[in-house]
Amino acid sequence: MIRLAAFCRDRSGATAIEYGLIAALIATAIIGALTATGTSVGDQWEAWTSAVSDALTRGD
Image (cartoon, rainbow, N blue to C red; front, side):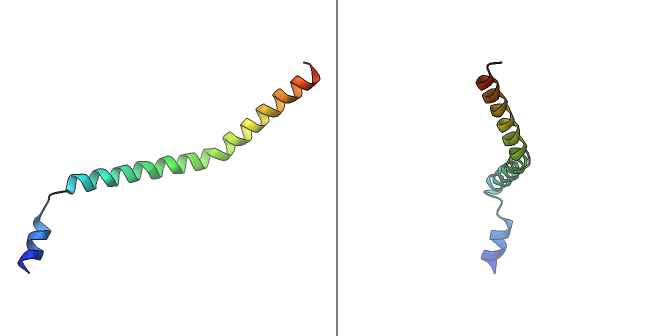
């Protein structure tokens, strides 16, 4: 029981855990943003490449 109480009072490593949680939160936000915008960026890229290809084949 004494070991458990000492373990609960021990604060070593708390900063590392906090930084790890912050990094995980930032990574989750980045993944969410990229997932949300990824398809629209891909669609826009396809439209641009199609327009350039059409312009080159027509000679405009």
